[in-house]
Image: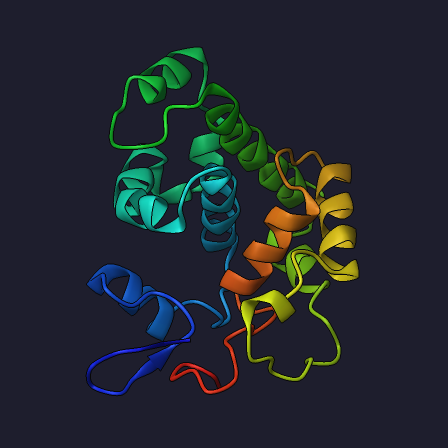
Amino acid sequence: MITEPNDLIRCFGNGDPLYERYHDSEWGLPVHGDAALLERIVLEGAQSGLSWLTILRKRDNYRAAFAGFDPAVVADFGDDDVERLLADAAIVRNRQKIISAITNARAVVALHEAGESLEELFWSFAPEVRPARVKTWSDVPGSTPESVALAKALKKVGFVFVGPTTMYAAMQACGLVDDHLDGCVAAR
């Protein structure tokens, strides 16, 4: 837990206004809609090996580079788009991460063509019981049976770069679980 001079207690994010806003008003709150969920999945994958603050600082650039994460538009990206994105210093220039974003958009489109949605699939893995709040990050799991199952289900419909740990982070970010620590100003 981090205490600010104004006595606000946050479980993370103090010291940077962008990070504080994300912590206080976004992380752990429900996210709905296929484009919004695709964005979170892509950004969690982009974060792999980097700090989340780095990705937060690039998020608007990602939104511009990936057409607001409109699945149908991103699904049509081709080799020229991959090269354009690899040259874009405003995002993480990693070929595997860029291709995974396009592949995952195509998986969302395939879900739509099958009469399904990413939102329905993603939210079907929300835990039925909310665990008790914990006091330290060491008590927060890196993955859960639900995140393992979500990762498998997403892979089955064509998603890539969606391992259990990355999917647990997405579940936290999208409000399927609320892991704000006990005593945190954002604990609901």
